[in-house]
Image (cartoon, rainbow, N blue to C red; front, side, top):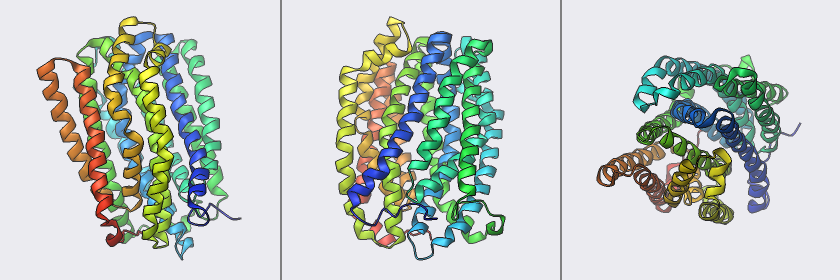
Length: 446
């Protein structure tokens, strides 16, 4: 059975589009679920429900921070190996990565469960929603181990150039999630019902991913290939550790954002939560580009064709033009409509529209930011992305706190700070690309 797709063969732009379309639909489905989840919670449980989930968001992002380290490592190592002379080496890579994902997942979940009370204190979570927030995150985290392994399956499948199979898996799980949400909430389970619906979708995604990879020649779990050597662990650590730390630093930034928004009570938490849903949609477009570029560049590096990276980036620029225009138009013309999807509270709607217009300055740059970020990840230089993230994060925190102190306007301060984070990241990633040092570093991990 022929597995995957060598994206370096044939017309590059056509290959990128064919890979990108199923990937985009997959990510959109995931984002649509998050939006629909917010709609159900907002209309069935009110602004208290929205605020409760908003206060869980930083903890959920912390869980995904550890997951990001696993998925990026899997994507880079497998994509480079897939187009190398020794494709069979994938077997020696993927089985240990599955085991590592389980170990990291268990550690992450235990730590987050034990520290959730401390986290909510740091977020300044309103007392009215504290119990709901604790209930939601407890159920969510218990099921999250299935996402750790499930996303490892999906990352491996995408890394070999197959973006259609993950789409099929996500169609089933996201539809299931959307259907179960209102059922469980209306059965009297409240916020726990929304969390349980998500957990069930995680389990189903894991099962489908496992069944697919079990039939795979390259990606199946095989105990015979479970040889975790020191050299292998060093490669994993070099790739994954900077990503995990980088994402955890982002969590602290989100904690600050949630804390500041909570200073306005449930009004602030609801507003921040609604805009965060829009941010997820924007990130769908950007993340699709990032994942595409990471895989394509990884495959070219597997063939030692570093000179083709420039062609990948030029075609990537062509692909982000339309998404960028859509984001700008939606921010200008669709903010109020978007806000009304989640709530009928006019005060929340008014504040949401105003905040989206401010933070939209940064959101409009997300496709370009992720294009450059994907290029850095594809070359395997996660340490540079880590450094860029630290610089951007420190800058955002300083700007947001200083502006809030001077203007006493929470969402203006957050909007400018977040926008600065994206713009500075583009500058720093751009410096890396135009320096062409990636052409000399030879960051192959196969």
